[in-house]
Amino acid sequence: MAEHDADTTRREFADAVNMTAGELQEWLGTDESQAVGQKDGGSGESTGHESGRRIVELLRTKKADLTDDDLAHMRKVHGYVQRHLAQQPAKEDVATSRWRYSLMNWGHDPLKSS
Image 1 (tube, rainbow, N blue to C red):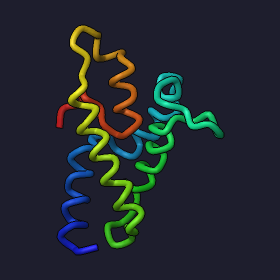
Image 2: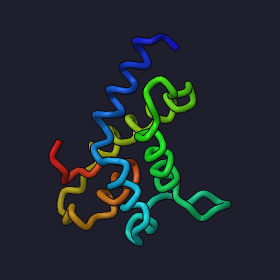
Image 3: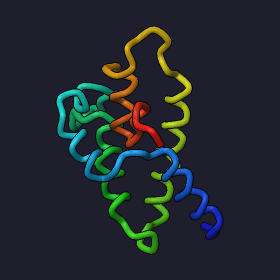
Image 4: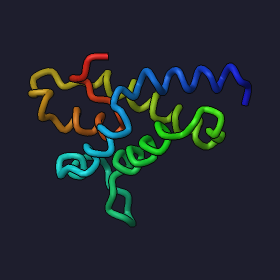
């Protein structure tokens, strides 16, 4: 992977993920976090919750130690957050919405100022 691509990926990931590793790890332990998202067949854990655990690891990984697989997941996170932000519910109370909770599993709290 070209260095420019890796830099772009890291920048876009940082723009998408506005929660710290500690904030995200704490959130992932809540009932609300575990109640949203599509569950995979085996573990019963949602795709977003699993991704959130991976994001915590990525946030704690040094730039030089990121693998191509890490960068691919970072691109996936950026894409998910961008698509999901575009689907904000019009009438629902965002603070307690499944929409917000799902985004938070992916490391983005839409109520948190940048």
